[in-house]
Image (cartoon, rainbow, N blue to C red; front, side, top):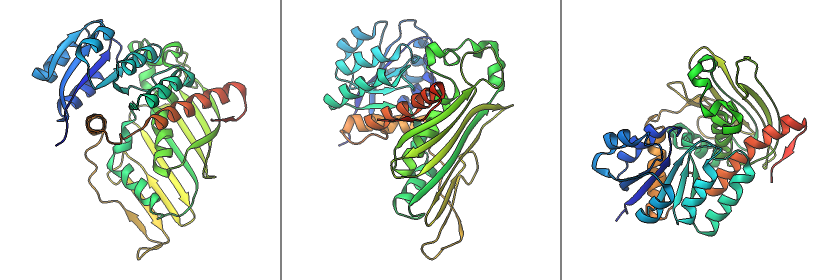
Amino acid sequence: MPQKIKVAILTNQTGAHVGAYLNALRDTEACKAVVLADPDGRWVDSARKVLGAKLTAVHRDAKQMLAQEKPTMAMVTMEARIAPPVIDLALEAGCHVFAEKPACLRAEDLAPLAQKADSKHLHLMLALANRLNPELVAARKLIAEGAIGKIYGLEMHLVADQTRLTNKSYQAQWYTQKKRAGGGHLVWLGIHWLDLAQFVTGAEITEVAGFIANVGGQPIDIEDSATATLRFNNGALGTMTSGYYLKRGYHSHIKIWGSEGWLHLEQMLDQPLRWVSQKGDQAGKLQEWKGNRQPRGYTPFVRACVEACANDTDPPINNAASLRAVKVVYSIYEAAAVGKSIRIK
């Protein structure tokens, strides 16, 4: 029989996506109970309203809560500057960890936590929820089955609105302050696409070069624009554009070319996956994915993470992939700072 577990939420007044995580835990059957550690009390009312009887305890102190409640999994959603020691507390308590990205200001701060999780046979799962969007899963399967042959290269962009950066209240948030967030658009949004490039192709990014800038000139010390060139361990090359450029909405795109065709993902469209393969009875013809775009977002990803922790199965993102995503982003920042390419170990 499928197992059910107690899940802890470790957060504070600046926790990101807490509302989405509460909804996800409410709708996840493998989560039998939720306990909350919130020193500011910011999320207590919301948790009670969303979770009802599923919320079984509220604490101010995370260490005390972990010792008393003994949850199986901990969700850590805190600004990058203060997340690592809280993740460490959860791992020391024997918890699997689901962490809001980027969860650190430097990859060197997350690496020992990933090693600790490995040594304790625990999961450390970064909140990169796009991995389970149905069209991404379908694209990964097509590539794994050889539909477009050997991967030669890819081009991708993830562009959001510049408008948010003109808002004074937004400018005050932790994710617009480098000393608290680690960076700007690239580490907050671009990290999703950098992870997806590796997830979909099954190849790791091993070398990067890049530039970052504040092209919009807003009074923030993070980049609103980043570009990167990427080398993968299968020999493929790629490029990434990551920025706040639009008045509203998003532009997103991943295109992958291979020896036997190409594949194009645009998640914001009704038909988010198209490809051409030179194999099979549809050889040379444009094909469109006709699958259901739902479920998508945080709920199915959180559900999969909880189920993996409950039933000792593979999570949607493992320790190595979580660390790799962070390493890629911070290596691009390093490359931009020193003006040369950086190899990722």
